[in-house]
Image 1 (cartoon, rainbow, N blue to C red):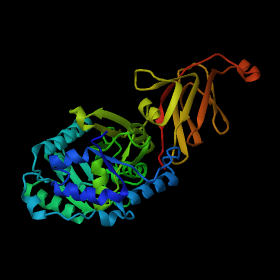
Image 2 (image 1 turned 90 degrees about the vertical axis):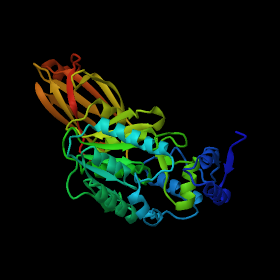
Image 3 (image 1 turned 120 degrees about the horizontal axis):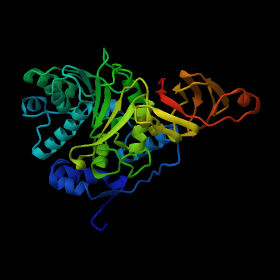
Length: 411
């Protein structure tokens, strides 16, 4: 640790000047210095707080003020000036001096394309498109691209390059919390941008509603900082480059653990998918797939379960005594279980949550709704064969039932 550069809020301005003097964060000499940075915050967020709650967000905003030296104003701080004419004429939108960073971007985007496997001509919404490299890549693959960014200069760059290259891209000015596409889309891509959102779970939930209702439709993420190095759920990153851009530009640079972002996707009503990028040093590709009914991957993102197992045919087996223990949630959930009683007789299902519920499952399909599920809730389900003796004296033989899946109506 002797070669580390110790930083506090008092010497961050000097740190920024030194990085700029070395050629900026893209230069190898500056990169070596950024990699040695170690920040000692005066603000110490309480990691026991609810990660979805207002107190945790406020403590992260306090830490951002300490690092950036200003209040958060994304509409103003994201307005970075660029040389539009130069980048319109460049071989690629970034106009990198060094080819390797360009290849890293393409490797991540290629992994996204392979995971989604979209149909030619399908519509992709590129959120926070920035310079437009991701939009151009997807358009060259045969997709119709609708792009959005908060910076009008980026939007102008993307539209002008699309016109020069003859690509089907239309870019718009907007931001995560209010803008939306005029029509449903097949894919929504967050490339290196979701970490600017103050409440990523709400952003994902909102844009999940813009997806066409088709199993091939996804929310896609790549180039996002998935890690739990500083915080167990989510929070500002304290690496050298994040410190640099927060101090210089005032950007909000968060990161999230894998478990947390999987939970956010599940809360948006999507099945979480995680795959490694083709080059493992470049992180992971994450996706939320639209499904009419959710299975084990969705449940595992929200709750620890026992007595519920995948049956190998796309459904789940619910055994006589099953439990679900939910983690942190931003709001109450309503869970709808689609069950199939293999018959021939009825089954008795008791569910203990906030109060005891009893359901009779007739042979064939059944639908059971459990309302009012809160963070930390533990659901206990007892499934028994139902007979006259069971009704009179309790008990009953143990049973199994096929759980076709969960219908989760995101509110």
